[in-house]
Image 1 (tube, rainbow, N blue to C red):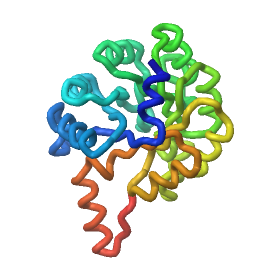
Image 2: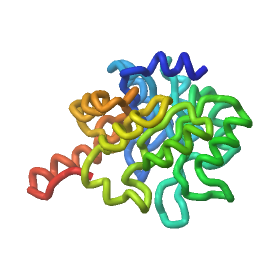
Image 3: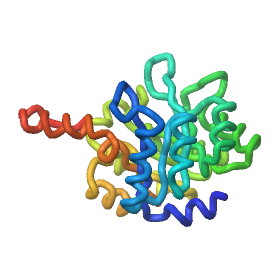
Image 4: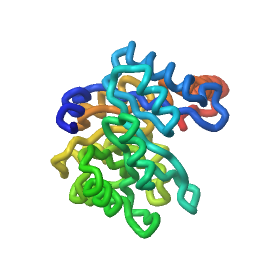
Amino acid sequence: NAHDFFAKIKGGLIVSCQAEDNDPFDSPEGVALFARAAEMGGASAIRSCGIEKTIRIISRIGLPVIGLTKAKFDDGSVKITRNEQEVLRLFEIGCAMVAVDGTFRPWDGLTGPEFIAKIKKLTGKPVMADISTRDEGLACEAAGADCLSTTLSGYTPETRNDQRKGPDFELIESLTASVRIPVIAEGRITSPDHAVRALERGAFAVVAGTAITRPRIVTSWYVRAMRGEGWQH
């Protein structure tokens, strides 16, 4: 249940074990190995994308798993789990929580908060709302979301310019001052210092992904920095 899940992750690190775009680790076994390594390193939970990959991760570790699926809106921006059958399947395979797109962008006639309200009524199970703004966070809390994640700040048309400033510490701080449910910091957390700063701003827990599980991208950061090109994002 949500209470047990939050007790396990409070103040902890959630590692997002995802791979795509022909990455060498883009397979169920590849991401499962990353999840196992994260567990050995002290992670408190895993965030996983895709049904088959999530099944493999759950079978290999003893940590709670936040499941999701990923697609795109018509404008090409990322869309997180906005399909009812996929939500049901993620819970069926054993996810402790499912991450859902909580932005105001409509899909199949519903905004993110409206979809969350529907899922909560249908399942009664824990839902994480991935949002990009404070107003979306407030709406998702009102819709019944169990927690908020700043995942989509910088990845929606309205917030895309925010990518350049690194982690959205301002959004974390604004949300924690405005809602009663836990706020999870996610998005461009590329160093331990970022994680600590997120907790200091009030984050309940922190998600890190690329800096841990995308060695191809991390390598490119070093190469670009050494060429004098700048490296972030």
